[in-house]
Structures are given as C-alpha cells and as structure tokens.
Length: 532
Image 1 (cartoon, one colour):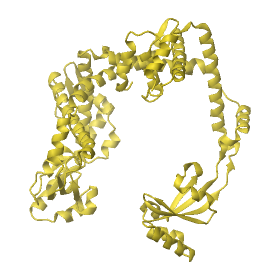
Image 2 (cartoon, one colour; image 1 turned 180 degrees about the vertical axis):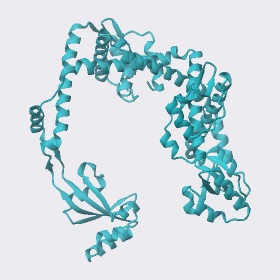
Image 3 (cartoon, helix red, strand yellow; image 1 turned 60 degrees about the horizontal axis):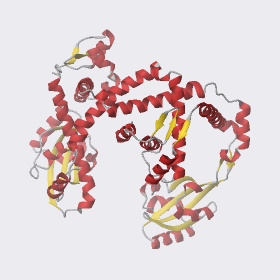
Image 4 (cartoon, one colour; image 1 turned 45 degrees about the vertical axis):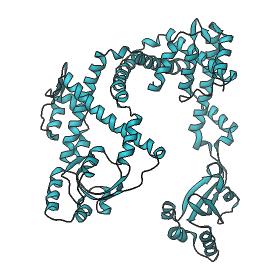
C-alpha cells in the first residue's frame, strides 16, 4: 500500500457509526473513502453527490462479500499468500524505518530554500571535463596536462563523456545542476586551474574551471520548486549515508578486504564457497551467497576499476538489507499500525485474486464458434479507421510558408524542401515524414488536413513550433480486419464476457445469503459532508 494511504487506513480503524453492515461487519465513512481512493488513484473528489456515494458504497459491499467468502474458504491461510505476506511485512517494516529515519529527517524547510536562493542563484560557471573509465588512465592524462598538454585536444580524443564533442566544455552551469561533490570541486577551482582526479558516476574526471559570471537572480516563485527538489535530494542522500554509518556501528559490520577477481568468483560458484565476505552482529555473508546475487557476465564486461566498485556496492547493499531488517525488528516496526495496514490491504488483494482465479473464474474456456459469433456481431470493433500518411515542412514565418507553397506549385519536391529548409529537425531527417495518423489522433488545429486528397498540400497551419505545410502522401481506406488476424482478440473479449457473467452470478448468490443493512441517516450525512 502506498505510504500516502497509511493515514486513511488508520482512519478506517477509528470508531465511527457505520454506513452499512454486511453480516454484522461494519463499513464506515473513512473505510469507504480509503477504498474509493484505492480504486481511483488516490482521488476522493468524485464522492460529491448522494448518488456517487451510494454507488461507491455498493462497490465496497460487493468487495467485502467476496472477501468474506475468501476467508470462509480458508484463503487467508493459503501457503502462497502467507509466504508473500511474511516477505511484505518485513519490507514494509524497513520502508517505515526509512521513512522515519530518512524521509522525515531530510525534509527541506523554507529557510533552507531561501538561503540557497539568496546565495547560489547569481552565478554561472563554465567548466571543462575529461572523463576516463579507469583511474590509471586519468592519472596519466593529468600528468600530461600538468606538463602542458592541450586540455581541449585531450578531451576530444580521450574523454568518454558526451562533452567530448565540445572539447569537454560544460557551459552555463549553476549551483544544483551537477552532483554536490562535483560542484564543490569544480566551482571552487581558480580560473584556468586543474582539479585532481575525482571519481564520479561518469568515471574518473579531471576538471578545469574556465570562467564564472554573475547573472541576475531569477524570480523566487520560478526558482523555488527546483531549489527545493535539489536540496531535498541532497539532504536525503546525506541522511542515507549518515544512517547507514549509524547502522554499521550499531551492528558491528565488518567488510574484510577482498581481492576481487572474476576467476575467484567463478570458482566460488562451482565450490559453493563459505568464505565470509561480510559480517554483522548476528549474521554473516558468505561468498556463495554473495555470488548468487551477482550477474557475473555483466561484471565481466566492466573495466577493472568499475568491477571492484560494482562488487563493493553489491556487498554493501546485501549487508544493508540485513542490518535494516534487524533495526526494523528491534524497533518493533512489523507490528506498527502503518505496517499492519499495508499487510492487511495486501492480504485482501491476494485473497481476492486467488478467489477469482481458483473459484469464480475456474474452468472458463472459449470455443471457435463463440469467438466467430462475437466477431460477426462486433464488426466495428475490428475495423481500422481511415488513415492518412502525412509529411510536413515547418518554417518560422507565414511569409516563408507562402513562398514555399509557390515553390511547390512550381514543381519543387516536397521531400527535398522538407529535408533542406524545415525547422523541425526530427521530421526533416525523414524528409518530412510524420507516419500514418487517424482522425482521432490528429491535433484539432490540423483538422483541415482531413479535407485534402492524396497528394495535396495544405496550410500554412500555425502552432508554437512555427508554420506547417502538410502533405497527404497516401490515404488508407477504412478496412475490416479478417477474423483469423483478430481471433485472439475476439477470444479475450468472449472470456471477459464470461468472467463478468460468472462474477455477477456469484455476487447474486452472496448477496442473497448475506444480511446487509444500510444506515440511511449516516449515508445522507456522509454525502452532505463530501458535497461540493
């Protein structure tokens, strides 16, 4: 269950007069809201009229009846469901741990946003970078640069970064545009000075500050969301690192020095080696367990330095999972109300799925005759609409568009002009080709295209990209797809019909056997409360 729904789940447990009871089990207003939000992506605003509230209540009653039947059939004790819930409970407990220790403690306050805005938004930097896959490569290049080698030439020839095409240049960088550690090195360099070799997600980098310049401060309202996002990300990463250090100390984590080699790891796979590669209070990580989680083929394709980093990161992550589980259990988080609510919601979902798969929909099949009959009675569903193959030329002004129309009328090739003068680079590379389009997918401003015959050119049509000239290269007529081509689709449709019928039949029986009481006064009060 998403964390945003935890308060709703908890609210559902609060004492409230029920809107209805099903076999003496109550449905309260908070429970109705929670279930409605689960079905409608977290939105409850559609519960705004008496009719909508009653429809939602009936849907909840139906679901409760199926869940009560699932429990009667013993599905709560189904081994697969029990195992899945055990795993979920532990993960939900760890998620709650991280919410408390990371998310809640890394929240950005307005004063931090204001301080960043006042101190970090009036300066832009131009930096050059040279990135290599390994540290020895970077060390060697740094020595060449210190000896006077041309940074721009080496960046073009040796750097693996995208910036190599611009001689390593990264221009107009502001605070928050790059990782914090990278900025602390790059932006504090003296103009023209080199950094040492720094390890980043891109590889091993050498940086040179080209210039910094003062710029006007942006409007706070425009800058605030981005600043808050940058600060939030940085605070979260810093808190995550700090919390992991706390766990390492508390659980006496040891990560012995390992001379990682793929040969040794492959040998461990064969021998199921029990050599410890990590330990903590109450547990160890063996080499064989470590290798079970490793993609050896992927690791083999990495440079040696990246191999070591990948292996160290995996070991760290596997140990982190174990000590986080220990900490969550120590804090009794598996029994926390938020975690229990998540487990209960998942239990209901799994029971419902099992009930429908193994009971309600059991034995549903379709025949060729049923599929053919469905096809014959739903021909519009299997008919492709008329479509048009379009090409375009985009120019910046109406005058240029009309001049282009004159060139076309004089015999110029549409494809040639699209390739050479169109300001839309993507379609220009394809000689203006936009592919096939049906009326339902055509933007409203392009509706005049529907009146063109094959080979005709229309426009100019103005959009925020410029002025478009549209050519209808071909028109594909409406066509009925042959049965053999859509047989599987027809079979799925027949199966859906049968499933709906089976579900309705089960529901009729469950409702007939149930004692359902609607509290009219509470339903009306609930509807008034949610009206807008």
